[in-house]
Length: 310
Image (cartoon, rainbow, N blue to C red; front, side, top):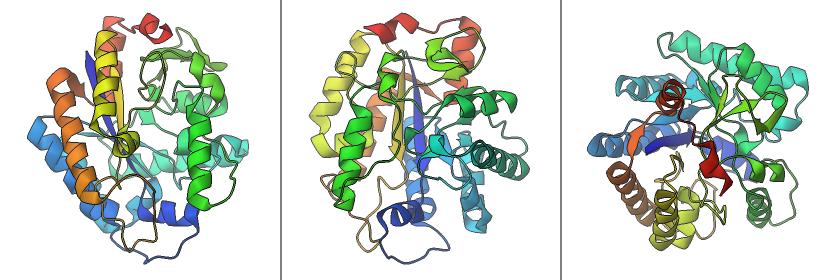
């Protein structure tokens, strides 16, 4: 079984902008200064190659560009996470949607011409078929924006409403995504939920089979290691591949940044949990970048589609 390990590099400013809180402006954002080195060291320690989804505008800062180069030098993958991390990505006009993908693509390829940028993730998992068609036209190989669950969009909206202290209504992915497989599949540009032979892949963020509840780091911080063990054992029993998501802020001490995320615990606890998860993934799966997982499954014609329909 394969595991694609992923880190979304959403800088502090993305949270401050969303929460409309005041905090210091960083020339060298803590996500790059402290978060990335933390993950790079753990990945080195446990022999993992991972995918880092990058908001391209952040690479205008020279310190961030240097850190991104260390990611590539260590053998990891960099992928497109839009240019400016807009909310309601799938609700943007066609021109703005195109701009977000193309500007990021051009930026990444200009800075890292040998990086072979092939993957994409939409902010807040807000993806639609228009974006898929653009990605295919730009010769991308996969998207990793779908959470195959009926409950996740509702849970995310509830969580964000609690964070902001009022009801919020922005796109966090479609409840219709509960129909998609739990493992990698080739999607149709006409309907993300449909299998096809079009050669473009969806790498869904892993959920617990049956219940289809999230298992990525944020939820393990909230519920504890027992929750991760429960989900991982269910995944192993189903012989599923796994796409595991971390965020760049996971190991950071958020005090003083104007960011308060309830129930996730202090940064010491979160760092310990991150290492525990990474260690378990390295022991029980063959870990690699998302691009390598897709290419391996494509070459072996081993999509495991039926595993997602349990």
